[in-house]
Length: 298
Image (tube, rainbow, N blue to C red):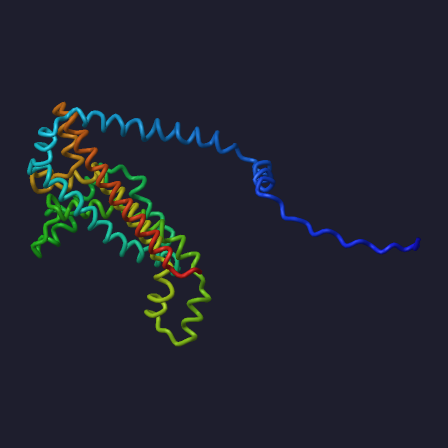
């Protein structure tokens, strides 16, 4: 025999099977298992969301079809739904534009009072809605600081549908600003410099490079603002004046029915508003997902 034996070639190693990979993933996890976390999640959502909503739908199911039809053919209820949804959409659109503007200024510019202005954006979060409603009414009334100026041009804000929109804009603005602001902070400055070096104008750089990256966050902020202002009550009832068929909102109709001990009628209106709100939010989220899939990868 030769002293030096030739080494046999090593057999090719097979990749680990799927079972081995799954087993490794399970053993490597340091957080509680899927079954435990899923159980707590379902229990929490059931106690906080599903059971109360189920109770509302059950209460509304006690109404007959004729009673249900009488509730929603009431002109006062129809006017309240129209005002609530139109004002919420208008507020969301206004906040989308000005929320982007405010977020851009807070991120891209340095000026005295910037931190104070940044903290004022969160004021609607901390301020009680009733206090906000009283303050807006005092300012935009015909005898207020802003209302007296607008009154000279024949513009009335307080106790009109415009006042409802103004209150909803005040409540929903922080949702757009705080959603878009981190995205602007994470934008790649090299892309803007490259566009400028290639001869792009400032408007072309913004519209072709910056704005496409902001579209998903704008949709998210707009949907959050819309969902928040749709059920707003405290800041609206003071500035709206609660005029029947003119400035009544759906939450006020629900409260009035509860005060009249019409619980089935109140829950019926609440359930219909919930279904419409959920449908609109689902549509917005699907649209946001579609826009996000078409946005350029950065």
